[in-house]
Length: 231
Image (cartoon, one colour):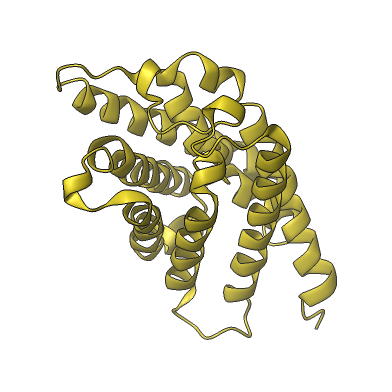
């Protein structure tokens, strides 16, 4: 179990550091040409790389919503849910701390004013979308994320391609929802940066815990009840 938890810690660290780091350090410079597309690709690449690196150790969740969704889908033991979630959240916070240390080396950096890649709705949504929009998109995208994860890790699916499919799905998710919520679908990712943003991100954090977890459960149950091969 200790190796599995370390794998989840490092995988979540890499996801938050790579994905949020691309938003905080690179997306702010238009001349680099990264933009929303670059940030979306960065999140997808973090999952692809770490899923291949440590997925064989822990399953490569790196996300409390995935852990809970896999439990709902009958793919994960209940006794391991809380330890996995704790490891993931610690990994997300550690990554945000390292990112904050790097970003604060630039004159004028202000995590509170700049948002620090935090998730938000209303006036804190990149596109000004409402709480309703945030709830719907996070719910739908997390549910479909879990359907994809269950499907590509099914015994009937082609072997060896699951990390690539999951990473591409996360890229697509970000392409859709960065303008709405800055894309969460991952409570550990949201928590790490919210702590260092320190104000509105913490106040709105409940949405990016509750909704992805519910979406993960829905996605897991859909696959388990409607798509799983009962044999």
